[in-house]
Amino acid sequence: MSEPAETSPGPTPGPAPEPTGADLARSALRAARAQAKQRGEQVQQKREAKRYGLRSGARSDGRDPVPLGAALNRLLTERGWESSAAVGGVMGRWPQIVGPDIAAHCHPSSYDDAAAVLTVQCDSTAWATQLRWLARQLVARLNHELGHGTVRTIKVLGPAAPVRGYGRLRAPGSKGPGDTWG
Image (cartoon, rainbow, N blue to C red):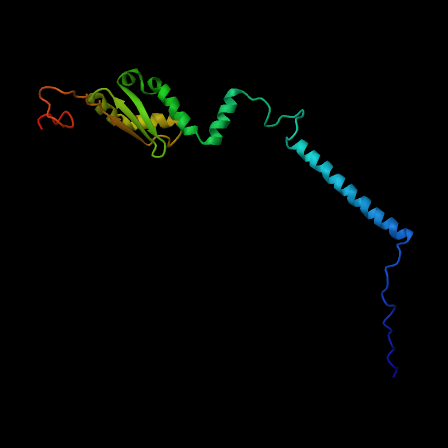
């Protein structure tokens, strides 16, 4: 059998050798590539900024003028005010929606967006009763105008009781028209 070869530990590390011309060229090439890559990234960022509207250009972007109606529709959509604006339109168009006879005696007073309840005030109990009978038809007509589910219920209020002033038959500390005799 053969004897194992002796291995020598090799040369002992000493001071680093001076870089030769080829080593200097390689390190200069690496530095130039890194600078070029950095400049390329900067150019790419400028292109993306121009493409995504951070700079003005010939193409339309979010900063261009738009018609007033389109701007208002976008604002209503972004803020979630579509149903409130639609109900506000009903307040203005009430006579066209319900007809002139009902509109002469009943008017919408408030709208609860969370419960989808439209409150209507009538000027007499007879009209309040009539409107209660027509409530389903009015809800259907309003939802046709505003969109499905905008109004679920119509709350009909009769005429407000007159404020009673102090008089001869008024008991001190009474609370209303039914409480005049103490």
